[in-house]
Image: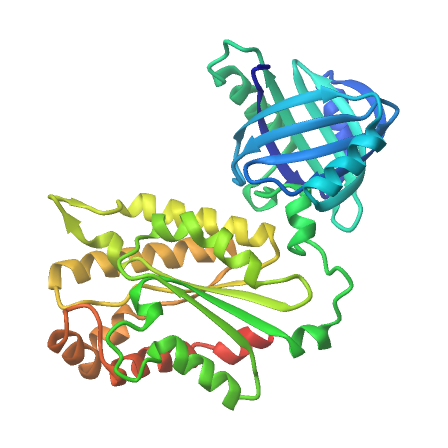
Length: 384
């Protein structure tokens, strides 16, 4: 069986393709001209499968596996040259089903084994893609260095990085209005809450939690919405990050006003077997990655910080983490609501947490948390 090829790749929005082309030429990159490409993606259980038709060039089938990450990432792939692309397209469409189609014009440049793609993608805009092709025995360190050098030379900043491929962006309506009017989005406002047990409302005898109360208040404010509660008890930031994309995107179709509320962190500060479940610097890195990914998908995010528990030493760690989360959100341009200080001062919250399991309040405590979120500009954020 053919061993998969490997490369290190990076994708980013390209705000000035003319300037990018000039920089690449100044670096000595070989300009191979423009290629018109049409990629048909098929439904598969693992990785991706696409049929590429291009002019100039011959059709070929590409099977690939890669992570959806905004930073450098390894991609493994196989390329099969084809004689009759139309016949295979029809057969695969019948057998597997078509997931989506991407049409683009690609300016191809080559620099020290790195393929530089200046892409103009229909419905999405302009992008720059770097692919450092690796020989079979490479440990990928050299390829990573090449991509890092080009990224610096091209001035690609973190906020321009894109985690998802073009097909995923089109399927989920990212980076593009896709013809949606503002009035239609307001008619179909969808909000996803994802996080830990406080998002789930654990301990509330009314079964609403702060999320249910915030949603009820939204209707009272004349802001009806469809809400999805994806809180999971005991989860850390890392566990939330592992599942958020897969659980979020099917619930947030493109032709809607889509937003996400994140809330986690207290479980990160729990000590197990003598060490923190998640170190604070790792918690912040996870949040920063989630915010970048959400931005690349065009999803506004509100982060509700971790809440205090019935443990003084842990509350100090929670307070420190909440402050760090606020800084991460500020740098990413995401909204943040800090709740640890006002809830520490709330007799209702602390009394109910202490009377319960030490981490979760009753109905009145959840109302106090909901009131903080609503008072922090909830209605304005929903309307924005």
